[in-house]
Image (tube, rainbow, N blue to C red; front, side):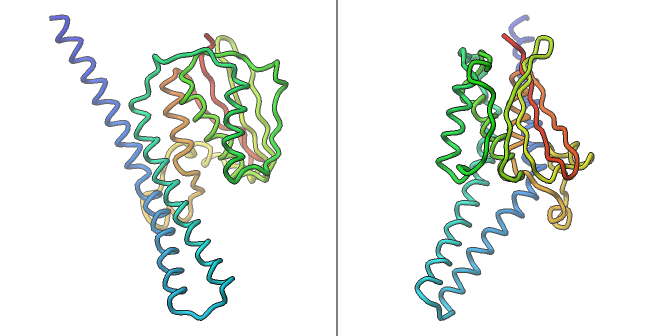
Length: 242
């Protein structure tokens, strides 16, 4: 029966996708738990300090601000987890022709509303950007994660560009940070920590890069990084030209 065979294939595909998602979530469990624990501990310590220590009004306000920042950090971690889970339901049929320069402009405006407005971001000329048929929401998410990652782990200077290679369009985001070793470049899109000590010693880039990898893979592309210690990193992603 052709219908039942088709159902079996779809069922197997869904099971494979679910296993992949669970593997991703499990891989990040220790890192995320460590990050959340650090923020919770900070909230508890500062709250106790406010209640048990005599301080000026300015000092108290500063402590409250620290607590607020810890809360925002926890919210950010949870949001990243939710985004990673939602990528399983990525609907690639919702394609629309997009001017990449417009998407990047939207992302930069979004970033400036947060705390990354002081980054020096160098862009290609507006008329040199390509037009691509992709899911607009997820394409924007790729750029957002790569640019904020470059800001967080770089030193304020970010370059963005693209090139055409055979039938693919290759986009890149370059930072001037500390760079990555060869082993870190292999592990950067996957979470390797298995215990508390490994978490402490690992250069964690959160869930953003895993989200990028999963989305790009769904779109039929690839993602990778080139870097040298002390010389910054360049993150690339390719998508089929259409």
